[in-house]
Every structure is written in structure tokens, then in C-alpha cells.
Image 1 (tube, rainbow, N blue to C red):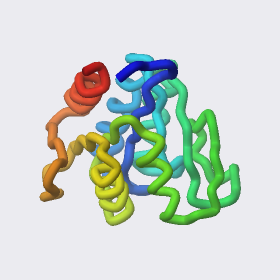
Image 2 (cartoon, rainbow, N blue to C red):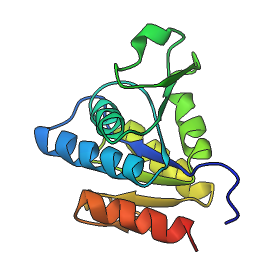
Image 3 (cartoon, rainbow, N blue to C red):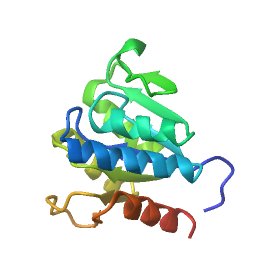
Image 4 (cartoon, rainbow, N blue to C red):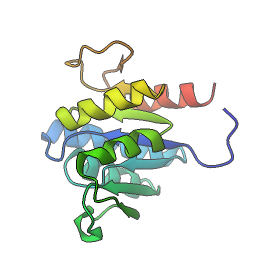
Length: 155
């Protein structure tokens, strides 16, 4: 891939999450920032907030694509807030705007982003092995997810 702009890695997951998922999302976000990519997410709480906090702590840039039409709905760690007013339909924009997607846990909204990303020909990496989806790359550790993402991006 010829690169004129920074890589954009989407981090997807539920708006509320377990402490283990928050820790994994934080580590994914921090590693994305450490490697110089931009973190793209849905901009709300849970996995999205933890990943943005990690990216911020790692010195990176975060973009939140909100389902609402109110900038104030973004979590405190989103640098660039994009309001869509589209509800869950904004998941298509998250998937399309990401060069690679990393799923941390998640629910139906995450499942839709996984499906959209795969349909768009994106690599989707999951830290949860509960999804039985053809084409999904499953890894065990946050750092492994980002390693895999960059291996694919740099090919």
C-alpha cells in the first residue's frame, strides 16, 4: 500500500465493557499511537473510550464518528469529533474509514462493523474468539492485534 497519509486503524467494541476488555482496548490504542497511526472509533464510551485514552497516552490522534448529532457526546479522549446523526448506520463509516479494524469484545453493533469491514475487503482482527465468522483473524493479545494490523498494512 502506497502511503500518503497516516494509517487509520479502527477499534471497535461495545459502549460498555468489562475491565479486561477496557485494559485490552487501552493497550491496543496505546500501541496504535506508538506506531504513528490514527485511531478511528465510534467515539462513545466503553471500548471506544479506553482505546482513545490509550492512544492519547501514547501521543496519538483519535477520531470519533458519533452516532448522534451532538459533539458533547464524544468521550473525553476524542481529538477529532465527527457527528453523523446516523445512529448505528455510522458503523459503515467507521469501517470504510479504517484501513484495518480491531475488535475488542463487543455486541451486535460490533458484529455489524465486523461484517461491514469484511464485506468492504478490510482485514478485521478480533481479540475475542467467540465470533465464528469466516475471514476474521483471531489473536489473544492486544499487542499481537496491532502487530498483525501493521504486518498487513505494510505489505
